[in-house]
Image 1 (tube, rainbow, N blue to C red):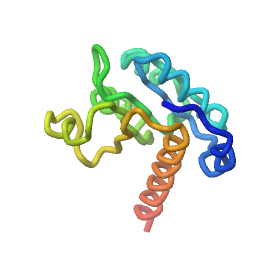
Image 2: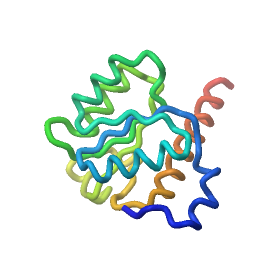
Image 3: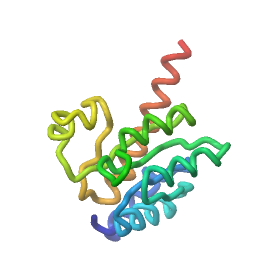
Amino acid sequence: MEKDQPKDHEHSASVSGDETILLVEDQEAVRESAAEYLAENGYTVLRASRGLEALEIAQQREEPIHLLLTDVVMPHMSGRELSERLTSIHPETKVIFMSGYSNNLLSNRQVLDPKHELLQKPFRLEVLGQRIREAFANKRAASADEQK
């Protein structure tokens, strides 16, 4: 994962937000780098290194968790299982999966449905910010469509 280059800061307004993100990643360097970037762009970041820790955070939190950003392959609980369990607690939560494995491999092994949002690792932090903004824009569009 690359750190922001000075030119990336020119675009930071387009990726900034004020939503709450639950970031679940078992690799500390990836987790901390992404968390720092997201916090710098205005997000409230809740960090967990494994699925059970993330569920504990979600169960204790009454405020919305707008986005679950989770690794797919983690010890003890997959990102997919985590997303299913977490969205039963916080149904408003949008989900983006991260993985170093290809989407085709994950689909073939039935780890992820092809409709799931997948961010390939390694990724540039600005790409992470853009994908998060796109996910929130898509959620708002779906909510607006449902109200018609």
